[in-house]
Length: 451
Image 1 (cartoon, rainbow, N blue to C red):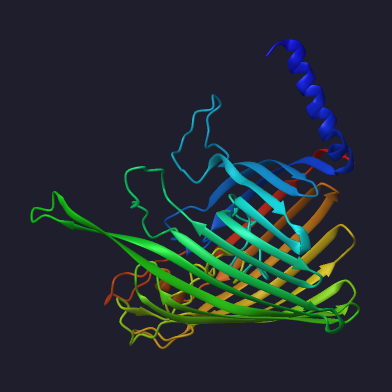
Image 2: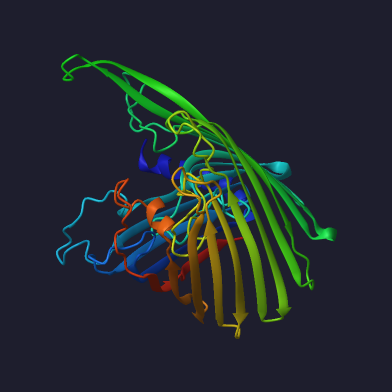
């Protein structure tokens, strides 16, 4: 094709597409986030021996992303760098081989918009549902949470529905369909989320059901334990299901949230699973800037009489926000509930000083839901949390906080720092406390629109 003919083809194509380009609406914008966070840890998440020194570290998260939207298509791409100060030398050489940090693709998805409220999204994406107990982008985490999956969505007035499915392989292998996947990460996942709003009553009702498939690899060795004779792949399925109800009405001082979930099937390692959790939270606006909160979370536990090699009744959190629940010290997150279960009762207050400054504080007390075999005591200690938030400007937020945990002997025993039985002595530990200061800067770099 000569140049003259080629130019004719281009002109014809552009002429044909011109009316669609003019009539369509397109928007593209780029945004970024820079979030350093300094932490002092002295017994954070676990009692610290007096022989160990408190830790000071600087975490850093950087994100750069772009979003596109039109009448028929949406898309999102986000690059993320997660690291600790000092993890890389001045010359750019990595000091650590930690695969959970560094530069990686956080989001990459495309969404097709169909008529009558339907859409289809596929790719790496965040999942955020209800109170973020089961699925959350986990913003406190330095890496966040994102999933590789396909999701069919429906939106109509006050009703919403999402149906998602993920099927994972750890590599591309043209010779076999079997993969060495382990059981720490799900091999496949199916979920359905439904949500409806009754505006006149101020009620939001939702339900969520999740099925996860985990793969366990078992290898039969030769008599000398040097050769693999056969490899067997076992599939274990965990089912989590439940509902949420939220009451929130404009100009009414009281709001409430209730959650209840059950679990059945098998654990990642094939144990029989039968568990539940319930949570209740009440907010009361005493005066306009002051809100008082009362609440409690109950996670079922496994009785000492149950064979731990065959069965468990301990509720296991999925992919929600760990730091959001059960205290800022992260002793008992939804994904690290003690085998005996957990009861978390709390009271907190938040005061809005002005449009820029919020201060909050809370007290929590923790107990086991079930007795341990060698102890009738259920007390797991208490926690105090204080937080301050300052909106420096429209695109910058400064936050800080301090937390302390009052451990009991049972806290230390459950956390695994007790000397082996029958020796009853406990290691001497420091007073558990933790503090942080973070700065979040999230500018929109530019926006481009075609109408």
